[in-house]
Image 1 (tube, rainbow, N blue to C red):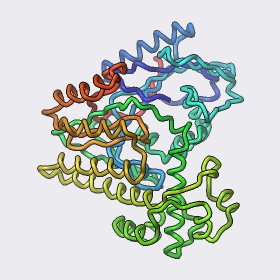
Image 2 (cartoon, rainbow, N blue to C red; image 1 turned 180 degrees about the horizontal axis):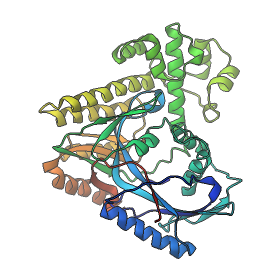
Image 3 (cartoon, rainbow, N blue to C red; image 1 turned 120 degrees about the vertical axis):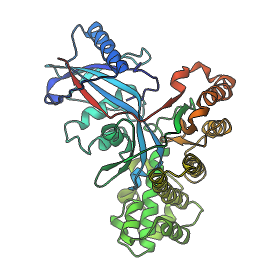
Image 4 (tube, one colour; image 1 turned 90 degrees about the vertical axis):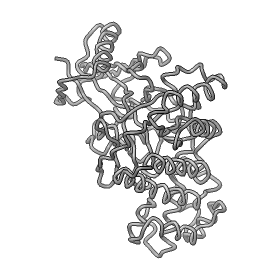
Length: 431
């Protein structure tokens, strides 16, 4: 589904679905709804009635999210530090007795869609808006607890679960340290003297329709296997870089030293990987590589492992600084965010010229730290800005990045805005 960037829910979904596909026992009593949320629900109810001639039976709110630090490490087994934001998406639902799904979006840019609930087909090559709903629909028949991350894979993305976790576990007023296997969340209190600002680069990158993301996942998996073999561990069962550290029982800093010793900066060919692991090319393709990475000619293992281990360390340092709250807290957190962007740009190679330009502009006009957030190759930046500089920061960044580059066509409030930690997903029943 599409993340909303506006202050209020301006792009919402309404649908009719067969009644057997949704749980009927979810109830949520919210005694004091935010006025904007209540307004959004009432508006959505009215539009649903106009569209389908009936009243929704329940509504779902899912918040947008921003990852403050910890990029591309959740699927490697490491903790991340995201927060839900106030911007959200609302969905209105009416179960029906037919087996036809009817999807509609309040934004006219996204056309209506209907399909049989018994024969859902998802085209992984096309970034159609309704595909994201269909992914969730296919996954909802299984337990919800940790299945949401797996649902995303129906569209071809080998993600790690951060997006889904923060959507469910978020609480208003705090960021979360999200840990995996088992899934758990710890409150992280952010500095009161600073705000986080989201800026959209206006460069679109659909990670489900491109190979960049899944190649990075595979490069990390291959790096984990080579590191495990280098240390005489049972490498065939190792899938994630965190597993190597856990089996060795050493620090992240020590893992960085092992990476320097075991891997070389030059890209690995499939043939060299086979030689290192003592397997055939056929075994590499059928037992290790995913279908969408079997034709890749080079893999950068050293750079990806260096990023993951150093980024994992930065997440823990970020949390520690927030807990200790030194006088120069904002400066220290900003430095970690800057280091994160540099690593994403140079070692993980998931940035793009527009993101780099936007980060530089944000730092120039007062951000203590700025970095890409999300998958990268486009999308947004997140910046930590002293609260007393917010107004001038927003004005200067808007002029320098959006007005001077013909990006002002994008709605301002959806492209550049300050936000604070918001609450998690909710379900509302019609009275």
